[in-house]
Amino acid sequence: MSGLALLLPAGLIALISVPLVVLFHMRSPTPKAIPVPAIRFWQVAAPKPTDEPRFQRPPISASMLLHIAAALLLSLALARPVSSLALGVISSSS
Image (cartoon, rainbow, N blue to C red; front, side, top):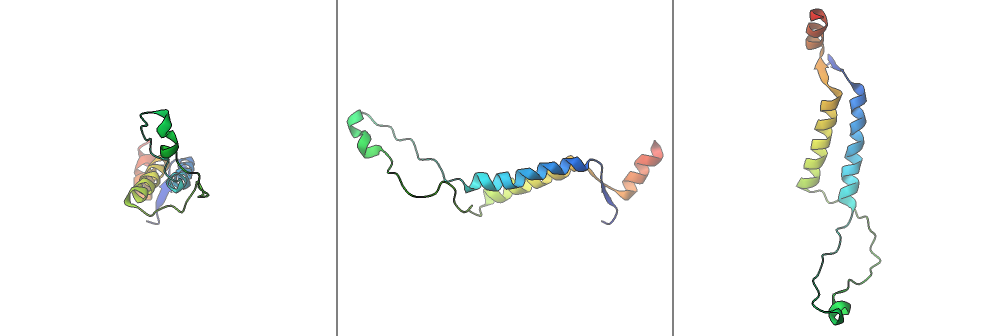
């Protein structure tokens, strides 16, 4: 693959999406909504404040790996890679 060129190198700017995917997976989930039939039960259902940080170490899950792979493939597709052989055919036909 020594003869690989990028037709649109600015498309690699989309690689910024990879750290964003990891950042979104680092967020801790929001608390579940609990239906409360009356206000007097609100104290029981109210979430207890914790000292737990909002961002946690991202879990290495299949979902996160698929999101990262999709972001990498899309950014590579935006850069429009082409081999030197195909580039020679394109330039000779012009």
